[in-house]
Image 1 (tube, helix red, strand yellow):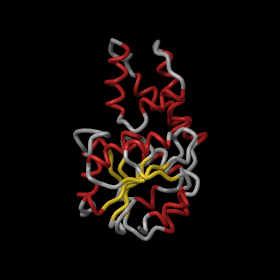
Image 2 (cartoon, helix red, strand yellow):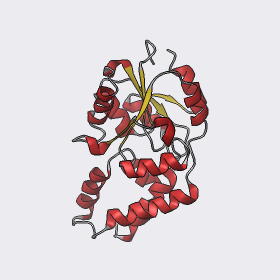
Image 3 (tube, one colour):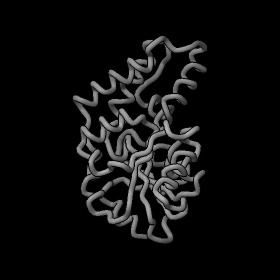
Image 4 (tube, rainbow, N blue to C red):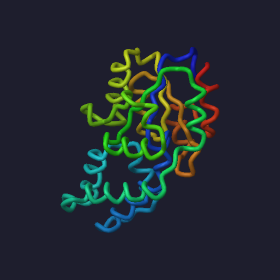
Length: 217
């Protein structure tokens, strides 16, 4: 838990701001099975959530024992955006939580800018975070390495120890801890393992409307 009120809240995007983990990982699960791997939605989430696409590609090719088919990533991203167009919603309670938080904030995600612009725009959150959105494409290493959160803190002129991260994935929690940043693990989705977040070092909560009070230390 926090010992003092933070100066900056760093939000992950997928699963924290936008309720994207279900549709995105179903598309990925289907794509993995089409190339001969055996995944369920649950195992896809457990293996890949929170990681950059570049990291996922390395892991998939190691398991597959050969390079991925041409356009695999591009086709998967296109299908994911189609699913988002039909299904994507903001995380329940996030808009009320953001409205109640009077601490500076930003977004730091393993996603690309194009994806975040779409998902945050689709859910009505893009204008709120305009100019304060950071992507894994801006750093050398993705989560679970600390690079992205340290980069976001630096760009927001805040010492890491004065920040707090809100995450929903184990790699994200590990990245925050490696950066020396306290982290709240949101486990309000059926796709999130709260015990795993706690074991990685997060203070776990399950209702996004609780977040404003949690941040008041």
